[in-house]
Image (cartoon, rainbow, N blue to C red; front, side, top):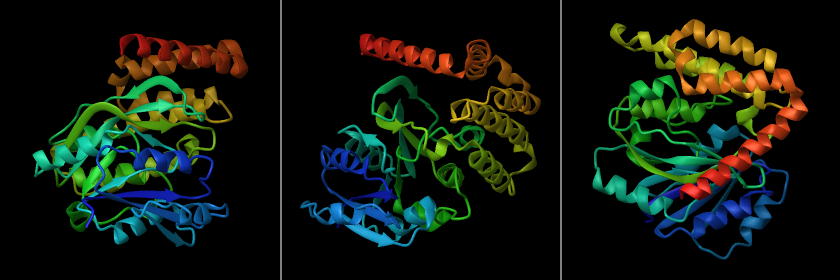
Length: 320
């Protein structure tokens, strides 16, 4: 039996899937299986996977069920003690599985271990930004405010967690990973590997840029999470709504419409729910981005953003 099951949902993902799978096969930890769940793709995903010679790679084809349904199919077929999820357009550094397995082996009560994530553009080039959260052990309070795991490709989870809290919610079209991590955090401690071992790809067709779908899903997740919260913790609900509005403001700016007026609306809603956010670094960054877009227009904003990414990359290279 493999110790780790890597679950990769794939829906028309061939522009990225070969590179993603290659990154898994080059891991320094080797006791794993790779379950590629072909979720009703109309491209040649099934043909490509069937031609791979590595016996650790297995193909599961099904009618389209969405991301949650594909992940749940992977969970059902997984044989490993630990389950690692990987979106078909993201990439892993070679030591990711090794370091996460070591963490879970060393901390037997931990249910989930996540890593930091470096954001890259559609070509795989670094934007110079890293999701670098440090919350661990009892991480529920921080996780309910915002998704500290960062992306769906950063977590490794003990199989027993799904037996305790259930599988991914198929009714959610987005934020299903945040919902799952919240449920796990309510029952198990978390651990974190403080290194950017995931490359989280950002591109215009990404679900994470579809702010309408995400904003609705965020609200569903929050309402679910607070159904059974004791009264002394209900103050966190306004914080949570503050953070999701801040996130929605960013998504409005990052969408193909570059709608800064909508971003202003969400920013105001964030402060209404959680006034202290106006002093946060993220709020200041957002306000600066809105001001630049209003002054320069969307085209020039895009050019300036490209320059900012280049400067971030240079800074990151000089530091490391």
